[in-house]
Image 1: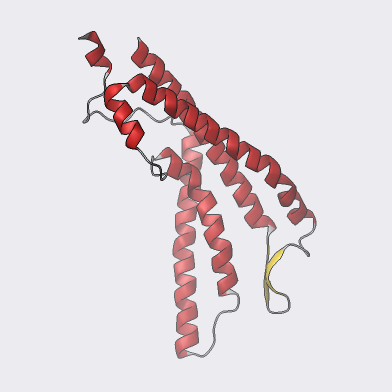
Image 2: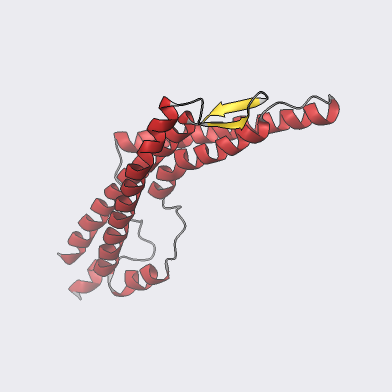
Length: 186
C-alpha cells in the first residue's frame, strides 16, 4: 500500500511550475503581447472606419497585421508553455498518470528536454537572419516600397527572444519533471 501514496489523486494540483524572475519576464512578454493585440484591434477598427465612412484607409494595415501576428505568437509562446496551454495529446500521459506516475514524469522530462534542444537548434540557425536584418535593413523589410514598409529586424529580434525564452522554459519544466520523478521514486 506504500506505492498507492505515490500515485497522484485526480483532484491533486499539478506539480509546481518553477517561478521567480524568469516567470515574471515571460509574464511581462505575455502582457506586452496582449496589449499589442488590443492595439492591433484598435488599428484594424480605425482602418475599417476610415475605409467605410471617410474613404481614407490607413496605409500599411495589412503589413502591420502580418508583422504583428508573428510577433505576438513568439512573445506569448513561453508563457503558453509555462501555463500548460500548449497543444498536445495527453492520452498516454493520462494513462501513465494512473498506472505509472514515475514513468509519466520521466517521459515529460524527456519531452521537455527535446523541446528545449530543438528550439535551441532553431535559434542557432535563425541568428544569422537576425544579424542580416539588423545590418541590412534596406534589403530586409515588409511592405511596398514607396507606399509603406516595415523593417524586419524588430520582428526577427522578437522571434529570437521568444525562441530563447521558450527553450529556457522547456529546460525549467524538464528540471521540474525530473525532480517530480525522483520524488515519486522515494
